[in-house]
Amino acid sequence: MDLELQPTANRGGNGIAAAPKFSAYVVGHRVEVTFRWPSFVQSCFGASQCVNTPWHIGNRADVDVCAQSPDGAIDSCGMTTVIVRR
Image (cartoon, rainbow, N blue to C red; front, side, top):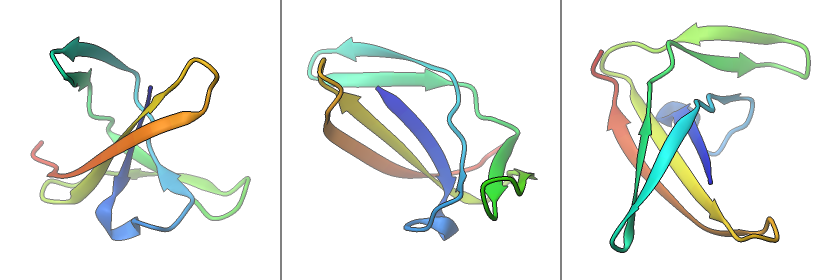
């Protein structure tokens, strides 16, 4: 599985995201994902020009989770939008 966080304002763009460590548990027909919200997201303006940008309370963020088959192909992805609370 892959987990990626990005500011909703940057949806569809590239060069800005965070990929925190996470754990995933299968519960019935669902997967529950647990992770610690990172303090910063990387904003990149080229391969070597990345800056740590802090999250702010009230910002909207997309949470993307993708499941992979054993051969490495991505089978399905899910996305939800959340509000940064702390």
